[in-house]
Structures are given as structure tokens and as C-alpha cells.
Image (cartoon, rainbow, N blue to C red; front, side):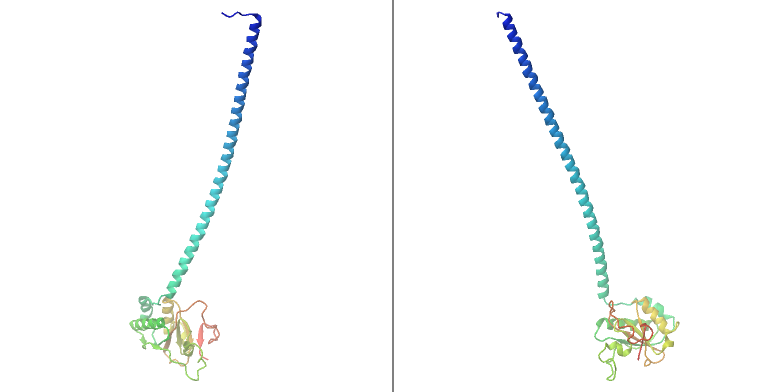
Length: 246
């Protein structure tokens, strides 16, 4: 059907080789492109992995900082709650543990008690009522509570707190006796001091020769506040623990 001559055979042979070359070139280009594309994808994946790892480390660090901050915040909250509880306790009316107070005084040595309180302070009055009640239950001879009388005209404490005129601290509870011998262990003063140390927790001491022998003057003043104390040497020649009338 076709006449094949040597010239035509050579033509078709050359043409076939050209087609083979073109096909091989196309395959090579495609393979190179695939390789390049694969390499680009691998680089992108590697970069993304590194970025993810970096972001993960940052997230962990931020989480640790947040946890540390939360721990500090919780610690501060606990401190504030504790401080608030203490402040509320300070603001609450003072109370005696009557059972403890009576138990410590019922079977020990006893004395007569002169009971005074600061008239301007309702809490002092309420506490003096409790002291009177429980002293009577413990078998002590306690006078009815009375406000501290005004200082005498010739008193050196006209411009001082009312408690100074009866040789007592301006805050808290003070026990005032006639002389030093009344302060010895085993005395009614010693028993009463220990009872007040047990409840409500503190008491001061004074010496006033105007207090009759065998009597203890109990003076109830406003609740003590931190660092609100008369200087140690105001009344005392014994280091501030015992107030002494000049």
C-alpha cells in the first residue's frame, strides 16, 4: 500500500528517534518537577513541624507561668482570708470561757474583787458583766461592776486616760494589788492572773497602795490593739510588767 524506499525509511527512523527524545525529555522534566515539588513539600512540612514544636514549648512555658501565678494568687488569697478572720475576731465582743474560768478559780485561794470598767466603751462593760458573773460562780467576793471614777482634781493624770488614775493600762484587763507581796505564786492574784491568761488571754499588773489589803482591783479597758500600749516606764520601775503608782 505504501512504497518503502531507503530514503523514506531513514526519514521515519529519524522521526521516531525525535519522538522518543521528546518523550524522554518530558518524562525527565516531569520527574524533576515532582522531585522539586516533593522537596518543597518536605521543607514546608519540616518548617511547620519546627514551628509547631516552638509553639508547643511556648504554650508549656506560658502554662507553667500561669500555674505559678495561680499558686501565688491562691497563697495571697489564703493570707488575706486569714488576716480577715483575725480582724473579724478582733472586732467581735470579747468573751470569757466561763467553764474554764470558773474551774481555774473555784478551788484555789480567793480574795475580794473591786471591778471597774471604762464607761465609754460598751465592750468593756459587757466583759465586766461576764467577769462578775463567773467570779461569783467560782465563789469569789466580787463587788458589782462600776465605771472608773473621774480623776481627782489634784491628780497628775487629768489629761491622761481614765485607767491611769487607777494604775491600770489603757487597754485590756489589769489586776491591781496593794503591795509586792500580793504578787507571789500561790496568792489569789496569781490564781486570777492565770485564769485571765487562759481566757480571754491576757492581763497586766499594777500596784497601788490605795487598794485595801486582801483586795484585787480588776480594771477592764478597751480591747488591746497592736502597738497601742503605754510606754514601759510610765508607771513602772520593773520593766513595764507591773504598773506602780508614783
